[in-house]
Length: 119
Image 1: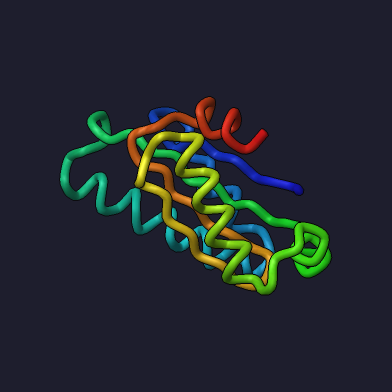
Image 2: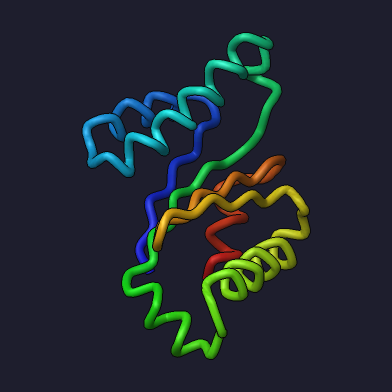
């Protein structure tokens, strides 16, 4: 598994700009980041919100699904979401997928907790 992690709390919000120079899939994720930051600024929540947004890409997703004995991609996503939710003790896990790309938004947690859950 490969992952790109960015913590969008405080001073790291400028990380979003770096994603604009990547491929078209990164552009879609960048647009989501920008919209979240826009809404946060609009509502004056800059210092009051805590969330972490992660883009996770799994190489050879079909092979991984097969090796883990899942019948299909939906079953894998369901189990993956369940494991993350259980390990983070939070129900605020959202997944969006395009082929082997996953976008996860964790509300009310930090990137350190998420890194532990992904290990």
